[in-house]
Image 1 (tube, rainbow, N blue to C red):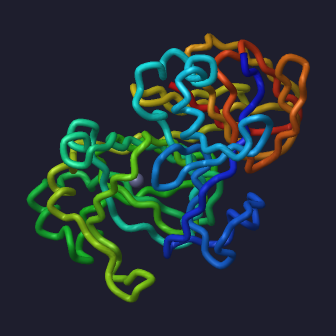
Image 2: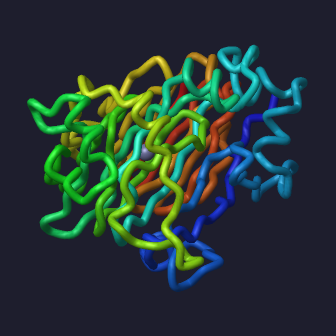
Image 3: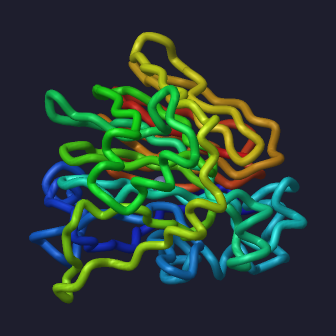
Length: 319
Ligand code: ZN
């Protein structure tokens, strides 16, 4: 049984709206020092795979490990036995400027039209500047015809639901919800393993090549569900374990470690962990591993118990 944590090196994305926080705050080994938008921390997605950086699987991609069927059950768990792909994707996102207003399809639409999973996602606000906002859903009373009329103009702003956010807020975004991260927010995103985004409005700006980035209005209108209303909650630091989301696609909890937390688990799923604050140690079967803010790793499904010591905040996700 492989009972060691699997530490991962992310893949970076330097989209135009990124910044320098992943380098400065999370000490990430970014490729583009001026502008890094995302680090794909725990990913087997072909658009950006994480690489294993410790022990005997060092240098392999997480995808290669997932595709090794002899190891599937012990590392990823029985719930992954029949899956074609690793089910989730976790990113850190430095939204220094606004992202496009966008929407993602559900499984049914994505499988039919894109040969991909759909994308339901959850944002956890790691940090933000005062006055930071996001867009999630449409304003009450806006119907689909109104949205269609204004969809590719600056007037779309009048249709969209702007929400103030603060550090520790979590927002669940089911597929079909129109949304955007606006600037000045640093986010951990847990999502289905999918990279299908339909852009509906890009603030009149241009991409790196000086041309407007592609929009996908028709598909967006196919999938937008204006009934989706934002689900937002603030996750505190007081309890040891707080459930952020429990959905058919993934479960995410926040763990606040003050001294020591002992976790016992059922063994049907891997646990994907992101250290979002502090530092300390992870202990599995009397072996100790240093962990620090910005680290992402997988605890194999076969590990029945682990301890986390120190002063830390973690996100743990599983299926
Ligand atoms: Zn999104």
